[in-house]
Image 1: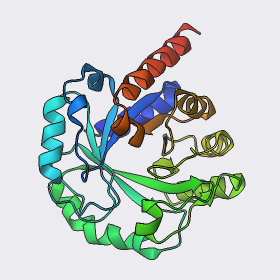
Image 2: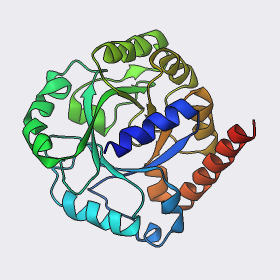
Image 3: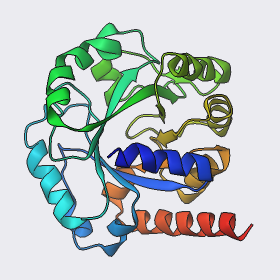
Image 4: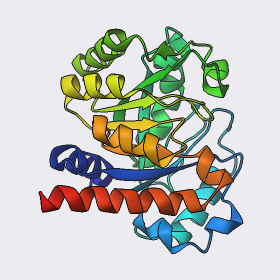
Length: 251
């Protein structure tokens, strides 16, 4: 059963908004979040990181699933080693914003057999790095440069090329720890062209930035660094999601 793709499709078609929490295997789960009931209001939990080798991934996912039984766990792989049968799904990423073949297809080939044998739901995903030129860990590891928020047409055309290649989901990422988020103009232009599920992450460290992403067309926003620093931020954004979706239903 394609549970995660169905979730993303439902968000995209309904106009409702979702919130995901990204857990870096290198950092694990903050103890302050382990007893939080807010986790049950998440739509998705992503697990993965730029530097993780995949060691301990099974144990981490099992720990996550014990905390939040009903929320699906999806792998957001930074390398071919980040594959686990313990998750429900895996975003099969192709880094379209860069021109390094290792992250366009190389890592994917190395992981393909293990993924095939794992039974995971696989979601072919266009991964596009976009910010104001800031170079972060994901750029260092992938040896690629981000596209710029000012290059609205180029980002949109890159997403469109991914659509024509048959990719089913689109992820615009400013990068973990980015000081800026993907711009509203970029999100709006990409969503207006592709119509498919659109995930936006990186730099979403305030309520205002998350709302701007929702308003521009993001179907699912991904929170990471800010939640690590301030677990209460997760509660704030989940409340925003609830109010946003309620207003959609009311109208």
